[in-house]
Length: 278
Image 1 (cartoon, helix red, strand yellow):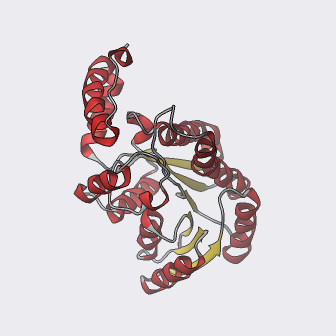
Image 2 (tube, rainbow, N blue to C red):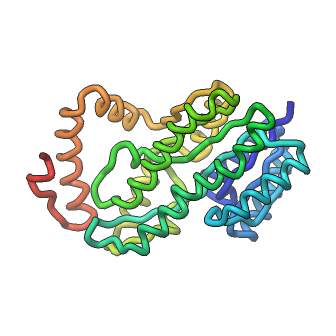
Image 3 (cartoon, rainbow, N blue to C red):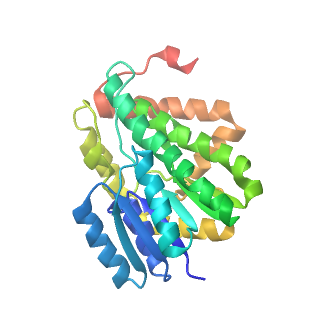
């Protein structure tokens, strides 16, 4: 059966990679994005890759956009099988320096954008008795490094929502996957808000060093939906750190403190006080 897939933020980065991954398997793929020029281009790429592409201008800050897309795709395709809540932005800064406007901006997109996506499509999934949500979080929401306060909180919120919906919707035949990549080559810093000097350059360097690409993560995501896996943790090193945090939190805390000192010095010249270890 031909899969029917909707991806938010599908005009670039990981969203584009996910759309093309499904297209190569002959899926019908709708991408929603705020950038129509890029969106139309990716629609063409989907068609060229062997799928059926469809672009819709969409802002995840508006529930009505997502509700209209759900109605449109249900009429056009007869239903939807996979919804990938991928649209997201980045910010960096301390609790003192990050403005409330930036907190509200990132939470509205990164957390509430996922909430709106799930809210808009859950009724249709229940009618079908099937469906899958793929929520793009981040290792940042599990590791919680300093100077990424608002971003960490936004991604931890996606993880919490995903774990909740996993239990809440399981009886309705609805699957949930939660994706937590670390650094990989993407365009996330294009939308990053931060007053930290050099933060974008430093993050871009870390991304370029990664041996894992957006295409690799997209393949992991498609496999997780097929196998009905909840966690998608593509990076081996960070996956091991997560296991350490779960089973030896004291050891993780000590290691994280030492790493955090180096991170803060590199990113801002700030020092982590000894009281932060308590």
